[in-house]
Length: 533
Image 1: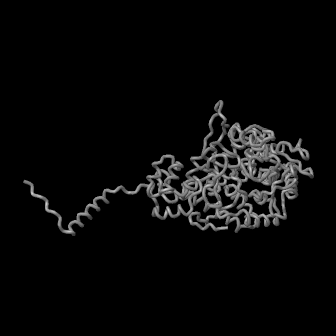
Image 2: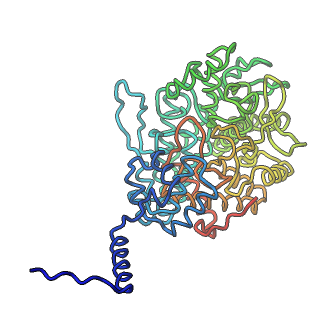
Image 3: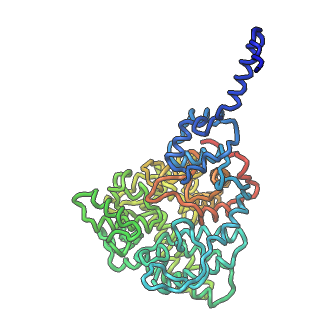
C-alpha cells in the first residue's frame, strides 16, 4: 500500500514551491527574437531586403546596447534604403558583409587596383565591346569598360600608388582610340562612339614619364587630332547657328559645347530616353535625344546645369549651353599642344595653338565670367545670357590656370560661402533629384577644386575641402567596406539620384583618395575632424 504524500500545511512551504515553479517557467520561456527587439527597424530591413537573404540581418550581432541602437533609430529613422543599410552597418556586425577586419583605406585601394584591371582581348562579332591594345582600369560595378574622363582621375591614384606602368599603358590605349576614331569615345562600347567626354587627354600627358621621342610624337599627334575633333564645327558655325561642337559667340569668337553625332535614344538608356521625350509634347523627339546625349558627353548626366527651368529633366537643352568646364579643358589642350610643339622645335605650331588659347581665354572672360556674382558661369546661346546655376564647374578655370588672380580670389570666396559642405564640395546648390546636383559630391570635382585653389594661393581652403572629402569617404568605407561612385556631402553618407543604383568599385574615388592622401600625408581620415559649415 502506497504511503500518502504529506500535505503541505506550512505557508512557507507553499511559497517555496511557488517560487520553484516560477523559476522553472522562466527557465523554459523563449528569449526575445530580433523581431521582438528591433521592431520597426527589423521590419524595414527585412521587407526592404536590405541584405537579400532575410537570414542575414537576424544573424547580425549588435555592436552596442540594443536599447541605445533603437533610441537613435527612433530619434532619426533613416530616410531611404541607402541610409537604412548604412545605419545597420554602423550598429551591427553583419555576417558576410562587415564581419571581417577592414584594411586601412589606402591599403584597400591598392588591393582594389588589380581587381579593376582588364587585359587586352580580341573583338567578338556582335559584341558592343571595343578592344584595346594594352591593360587598363575600369571604374567598377556596371561600368565594365574604360571611360574617358574617369581615367584621368584613376591615373592620378595609380601614380600616387606607384603604378606608372599602367598609366603609360592607358595612354597607349587612348592614342589607339584617337587613331581609330578621331577622338576618344565616352567609353569603349560601340554605342559610345558618337560622342566623347570632357577632354582630359592633354592633362593625362602631364603624367607621362617617357623619353622615347617616337612615343611622345605619336601622343602629340593624337592630341592635335582630338583638338580637330572638337573644333570640326568651326567651318560651319555662324552666329545663332552652332555647328556640331562649336558655337560662334556674338563677337565671332569660337567656343565649344557638348554635342553627339546621333539624335536617337541612347542604346544603354533606351527606355529612359523614350520616356523623357514622351513627357515633352510639341518638342521634336530627336532634339530631346540629342540634348540627353550631349549631357552624357558632359559627364554630368544629369544636372540642373542643362535644364531650362533649372529643375527638371523634361526641360533639358544641353546643346544650347556653352559650358565653362569644357572651354577651360580646351584651353588646357591648346596650351599643351603649343608647349609640346615648342619642345619638338615646331615654332609655327606652337604660335598657332597659343593664339587659339589666348582667344579662348579672352572669350571666356568676356562671356562666362560674372564679376558681380564672383563666379564663372555657363552661357546660354539661345538667350544670349549666362545661366543662373552656380556649380563646381566655376573652379575649372583655376584648375587649368586660365583665371586671373582677382578672379581666383573671388571664386575662392564663392566656393567657401556657397559650395563648401561639411563633407566636401557640393556639385551645385540645387536639389533636383539628379545625381550631379546637391547633396552629391564627386571625387573629380574635389580634386579640381583642391588643385585649382592651391594653384592660386588658397591652400587653406583647398586643404579643408580635401580633409572633409577624405573623412566622408573614410566614414562610408568604415561603415560599408566599399569605395563608392558618389557621396552625399551634406550628411556625409553614400550618394543617391541618377538613372541607376549607386555603384561601388570605384575607379575615380580610389584615385582621388590616394592622390589626396599623398598630397596631404598629415590628414588622418580615420580621425573624425571634418568641420561643419
